Image (cartoon, rainbow over all chains, first blue to last red; front, side, top):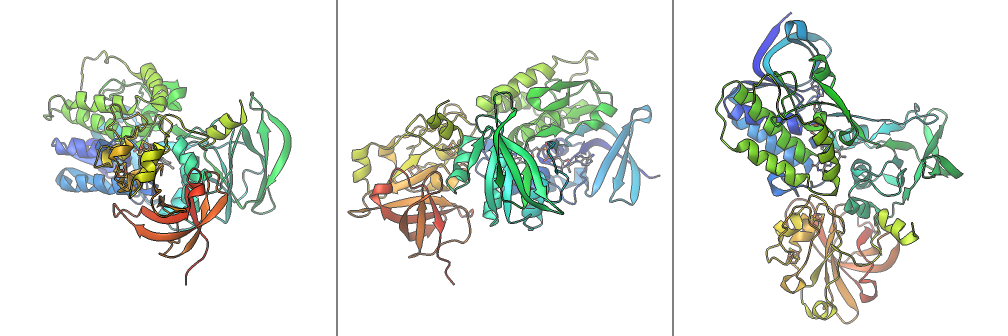
Length: 369
Length: 171
Ligand SMILES: Cc1cc2nc3c(=O)[nH]c(=O)nc-3n(C[C@H](O)[C@H](O)[C@H](O)COP(=O)(O)OP(=O)(O)OC[C@H]3O[C@@H](n4cnc5c(N)ncnc54)[C@H](O)[C@@H]3O)c2cc1C
Ligand code: SF4
Ligand code: SF4
């Protein structure tokens, strides 16, 4: 079997992976980016709305435009970057320090790398309810991919489950695509996403039912409706069930970091609720307990593209400098101060608590960055 | 939790508060071109309203999580913030348009795009139709497909009219 080799392997070509690749390649390192999707960009390419954050992270720019900006940056150091799309890293075998990878579903090969940056993003969570296996029940990510990447609408009338940013934004995007949103149900007593995103869909006439959830889906071969109910403080169903006429149920109840490869590499992992799941412990350089592995972006804790890009830059910078490439003095501090300012708000406080749990002062091997 | 708080928690403004303060009435009534009305009451890591404002009317943020604070006397009604705000939380309202009508300059990212002269439904913060308005102009200040639709509508809906629905479809 063919073995490809590189200095720095970046697994995942989303906001974090592309930033890591650009940073490492501009320092002079040879970088290989592996992306399982047909195109680079990760979640960014599906985001047609304008992003928050600060100007440094392209606030006010639409997500897919940010992906274009990152791709242009990669293009400008393309001699150092090798890209494989439609290729998935399927595992890491620590005994011979080899990754297995698969292009499409036919071609298989090995990869060896001196340093690896795991920027594999996140997976959607689903919730159990009666008939949740009927066609017409989608994750929000799937709805976005259908609409915004392939130009296909999922149905005519949607019940959205979850009023976090994803549920709110995807509801808005559904309306932009001409799909009706029957209602948004949210188990908590307040929206989880940004208030302004909720205001946007409210003034288009979409009810947001707080303290409500889906009880069961209705349908024979596909979804023809759903029953929702109110919840008490213990999140137990109370009161009457209400029927909602819909042909799509879109689940937007959160994401969990994708971290299998880090576990396979023996990185010390930790379950951190504030970061939404199992993540690798890391130092300020985003280096894990395995000195050859770095992590960044949603894979290191569910946050935002803005933070994912900065973390990617930190990981790229650290991986390159650990291979002896010269990097600008003081850059790490600058990136950390950007992260800190992004995390200084209401939503950021939770993230900071989570980071405090997983961050280590430095690894004992003494090899720092 | 009372009903007003619940309504606010679901994304509906229920009165003035920090980040969502109306312009002083006297200034507002006299300012040609209109002044900005911002409705952004939550601390979030976001600042394009302030960085896009050419006059400093939306005061520069000390911390990116600040809620917008506005010096309405500096506002020219240019709508750059309207088109830049990712939360669609900035509006310009011109009370000098006519005796009975105000001119509302609202962000619009839906289809179909209305045309000058079209009648549109004026929606309040929960999407109810509260009046009819006339499209006076459509601009695209940042050339990034967030349009700003200028709609004239009765002054009685100044405090409630925040979105439009295009009802008539032109051929
Ligand atoms: C609806 C929605 C709205 C959002 N709005 C905003 C916003 O306004 N502002 C903001 O800052 N953020 C926003 N975000 C969040 C932002 O999109 C993510 O935080 C960001 O994309 C994370 O970047 P990432 O690179 O870590 O992960 P991703 O973008 O998910 O990229 C990970 C990539 O890794 C690939 N991959 C995974 N496993 C493998 C493997 N084994 N082999 C090869 N490739 C693999 C995946 O295909 C994917 O392309 C939003 C997200 C959603 C869903
Ligand atoms: S309308 Fe123009 S001047 Fe007024 S606050 Fe907005 S950007 Fe500033
Ligand atoms: S740009 Fe809009 S959403 Fe962002 S802080 Fe300003 S008013 Fe709020």
